[in-house]
Every structure is written in structure tokens, then in C-alpha cells.
Image 1 (spheres, rainbow, N blue to C red):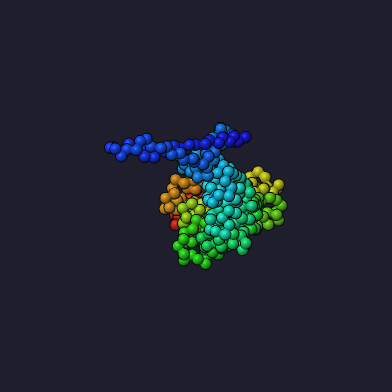
Image 2 (tube, rainbow, N blue to C red):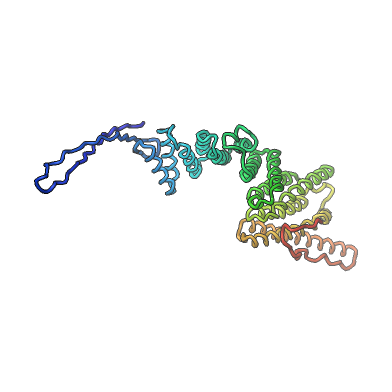
Length: 409
């Protein structure tokens, strides 16, 4: 409970206390008493420790700001919330609510942060301050595992005239890029692939229409949207596994190939932007697409009638179709490693993943080469003739710059 203590402060002020020299001295000065407003102290037991504070808006906000600057975000949030609870209608409460939201985000309470940013939006309705609060409100909703709600907030800012009026007007070009990309990311997290893809296409259209604007051409959100769009198709691609009967495998292969091409196209567009994070992420994923396709084919179900040494013959026949993509994957991984070095990201996680993918593809190629050499030897032995040497090591192809043109096998 809260305990109120009223303290009456009397501040005596001596007027004319200096003793005048000579006969003009008029004796002791008369005391002048000034009565100040009451100072109200309050005790708050809602936290882990008892907090005694002066019920004064400016002092609470000042102390909260000092805690925030010192990195004591939890205590700062508590003081900001106290200031609003005690003085809900004071001018400047928008900034207090906004800062409280920032502090709650910092301490990992996006649910509480979202409430503060929503209130800040209402208090700043009709101004650009409300726009700042809206973006953080949506970000907090997404962090609170409410991606569908976050996407709805972004879409409102993009397309709803009423929402736009409440945040000071339609979004500018850069804000529109960011809000659209963030909406797509939120839709993807909410498992709404169709709306996510629609949002990412909108980002790409904005980029194409304004690519001569430097800030648009260099925007992180364009590269991020292209990467995320590729991810939509990559996940669908990865969900298809080759299963018998043969007719189903043919349909699976066709569907998988279509998704492969859509994912590859989105990733390649992202690579060409040469963004330090999302372009090298997209470069890795292109190599991973090829690797995943090859591994899925290598592990496809084998018909029941194929047994014994025929299994190797079956796998070798499949390798006739996957040897080209395997070589392509090697080149892509090497190019992406070079791109990481070029962009100063040689020690990044994406560079490490590309190195691991490169080693994995070399192992797959080596295994397939040894299997083919063994089959050639067996055939030659059965026919009583000298074997023909297997093809040379295909891992020595020299890579070129990633994202500057490509050839299809």
C-alpha cells in the first residue's frame, strides 16, 4: 500500500541581518517567514525493494532518465511508470511513456513495452511522434510473439487513411520501405506466406521505381526483403521429399524444381546488392539450395526391385543428373566466401557456413567419384577388359565474383 506523509517546511529568511556601523544602526533584524508548498513523500512496495520518493513529476522523470542513462533499465521503467501513474494528465507524458517502452524492451519485457508504446501513440495522435511510437509498438508486438498483430499495425500505417492521419500523414519513402519489409517478415513469422510474399514483392517494386535514390539503393530493408522472399520458397522446397511410387517422384521433382528457381531468383537479386549481412546470407542459401537438392536426390527412396549391387548402379545413374549442380554448388560457395572477404565479413557466421557447405559438397563429390570408379572396375572385371579411368576431380573449377552473371547447366 502507499503511505502518505505530509511535511510542512518552514524556511526562515533573515532580512537585514547585517549590523550597520555607526549611530544609524537600527538594532536586530526582524525574521521573515516564507511558507512553501507541502512536499508529499510516498512509499511504493510494488517492486522488490521499498521505494520512497517525492511525489513530484519533474523529479521522478529526472531520476528515471538518470537510471536509464546508467543502464538500470528496469528501475528506470519503474520510475517512468510511477510518474505516469501519479500524473497521468501532465504535459510531456508521451515522452515518459515512450521511454518506459524503450526500457521494458531493454529488459526483455516486450509485452509491457507494447502497452507503453500504444499509449504513447494515443497521446501523440496526429503528430510525427505517434509514427515513431507506432514502429516500436509493432516491433514490441513481434518480439512478444504476436507477429500477426505486428503485421496488422504495419499494414495500417501503409494502407489505412485513418491510421495515417493519426501518425501525422502517409509514410515517406524510406519509412514505407521499412514498414513494408517488416510487415512481410511478421507475416512470414505468422505462417502467412501469401501475404508475406505480397509484401516482399511490394518492396521490390519500390526499389525498382526509386533505385536512383541512394538511400533506397543502399537500404538494408531491400536486401532483407529479397532474402526473406527467398526463404519462403526455400522452406517450401525443403518440405518436399522424393517418395515412391515413380509417378509421385516425378511430380515432386517438378514442384521442387519450380520452388528452387523462385528461391534462387530472389536470393540472386539480393546478392547483387552487396549488403554486408543479407547479400552474403543469400549467397550461402543459393549454395545450400543446390546442396539440399543433391542430398535429397541421393537419399531418395529406392524401388524394391533394386537390391544389392544394383543400388550403386541406381545411385550412379542419379549422379548423372546431379553432378552438374554439385559442381555449381562448389563454385557458389567459393564465390560467397570471396564476397565475405570483399565486404569485410570473412569471420562472419555466413562465411563459416559457406566453408562448411564447401567441405560437404567436396565430400559428396568424392563419394560419388569413388562409387563410379568402383562400378567401372567391377564392369571391367566382369567383361575381362582393362577399366577406363573415372573422370578427374571436378572440385578445381575456378570461381568468379558472386552475383555478376551466371550460367545454367
